[in-house]
Amino acid sequence: MTDRTAPAAENAPPSGSRMILGGLLALVTVAIWAIWIVGTRQAMTHDLPLAWIGLLRFGVPAIVLTPFWWRAGLLPAGVDRGLLALMVLGSGAPFFAATAFGMNFANAAQAGVLLPGTMPLFVAVLSAVVLGERFTASRLVGFALVVIAMLLIGGPALMAGQGAGLLLIPFGAFLWAVYTLAFRRSGLTPATAAGIIAVWSTFCLLPFAIVSSPAPLIHAEPLILGWQLLSQAVLSGILALVSYGASVRLLGSSRAAIFSALAPALAALIAIPVLGEIPSGLTVAGIVLVVIGVALASGAARLGRRRS
Image (tube, rainbow, N blue to C red):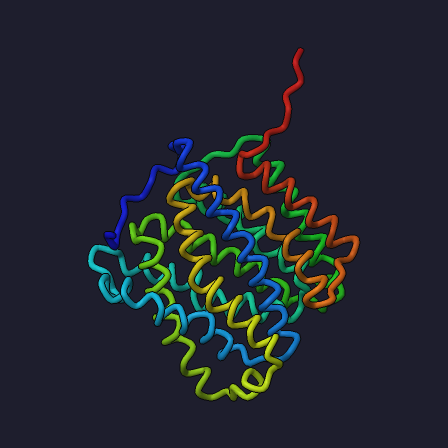
C-alpha cells in the first residue's frame, strides 16, 4: 500500500464497481456518524470531561494506526503544510471540541440536522469558491431547503437568546467541509490521513486533559463507558475516517455527500432507546427537509421540468 494516491477527478463519473463500493462505504460512514452523534450527546448529558472523551476519540486511533502515520511521517513529504493544518482543523480536535460542546445545547436529532445534514451545503459553497463549481436550479432549491431546516431547528432558540451554542454545530459542519476538500487535494490514503490527524489531535488535547479530572469517565456506568469507547475510538476515530475518505476517493465529494442525508433520521431513531430523546414536530420537519434538500443539492435528485 502506498501512502499517497492521486486525487480523483471530482466530476468524472465512477464505474459501476466503484459506485457500488463507494456507496457501501458511504452508508457505513453515515451509520457511524449517527452512532457518534448519539454517543457524544450522551457524553455531554452525563457531564463526561470533554478533553478525556477527545483522547478516546483520537488517542486510541493514534496508536492503532501507527503503522500508517509512522511510515509517512507526521509531516509527510510532498503534502502542503497548509493542507495538513486544514485537515487537522476540519476533522481533528478543533472539529471535535466545537461539535461536542455544541451538543450541550441540542439533542441528538437536532444535531443530526445541523451537522451531517448541513455538511453538503458547506462542501458545495467551498467548491464554488475554491473550484468555481456552478449550481443548477435544483441544487439551489436543495440548499434553500437545508437552510430552512437549520432555521426550524435553531431559529426558536436563537430568537429566545438561548441557542447561541447551537451555532457551534453547523460551524463544525463547515470545518468538516474544509477537511473534505483538503483531504482530496492532499493525496494521502484514508488510513494515513486518519492516523496523522489522530496524532496531532492527541497532542492538542493533552494539555487540556492534564488540567481536567478523568474521574467522571472512570466512574461512569460500564454501559456508558463501553458506548463511548465504541462510538468515539473504534467507530468514529478509525472506521469512519477511513471509510469516509475511501468513499470520497471512489465517488467524489459531491456524490459521497448525498449519503449524509440519512444521518439525521438515523441519529433521531438511535437516540430514542439510548437517550430517551423524542424528536419534536419541528425537528421531524427539519429532518424531512434536510433529506430532500441534500438529495437536490448533491445532484442525486432533480426538479422535474414541465413539458410544453
